[in-house]
Image 1 (cartoon, one colour):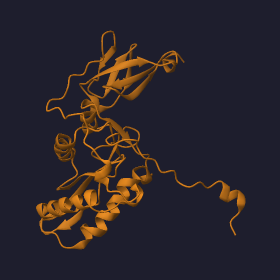
Image 2 (cartoon, rainbow, N blue to C red; image 1 turned 90 degrees about the horizontal axis):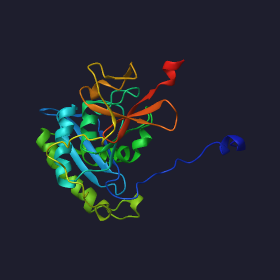
Image 3 (cartoon, one colour; image 1 turned 90 degrees about the vertical axis):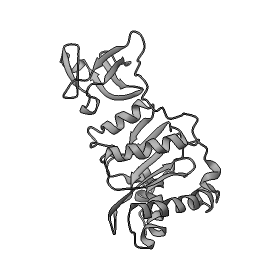
Length: 259
């Protein structure tokens, strides 16, 4: 009863998986819920390759400082990932047009690349979304909660079961812990200096998030205010990538000025 041409245009979703642990971590907040002492905002961090639950934190809010404190502890225990994937919401996103926040700048300073999913496409973080469904059904919805400490203890008990005991269908019934290993990249207690090398075209981001180059102002983002960025020429004459640490964060196209 399905039209053949219409059916041929539909494709099954392609499941992706990183080749090794710590190549990519997915992070998101699970919807908050009530406790007797306030509200709990569960923050989850999942390794893409192994589905290992690196963290399930019981947070009192969704502020950047809270996430940074949680991740600092996680990085000390597990090391640094190569990249982190998040959506475009606060505190790690500032909308699809300008996704950078001070929290993202902190990750880049640590040498962790940052990726954001496409707006309105939660399937980009499908593994973490599926993890949230299991967390809600098996833990959050299983009883009443006194406070954040009560939530944190339950989350940690269940995280051990999820990682080390229960088989995972997507892993051929292996456990996430059997496929995970800690990162060799240690967390630095002090942010490393930014060095773009000799001869680099370096500009300091000004108060409104702009840089001055070729007698014109170019937007980079207010999150980088006061930080040095480098301009790297591309294969297109007059076009430059604006790079912060090792990640492209904006573009400069002198051809727009010449028109």
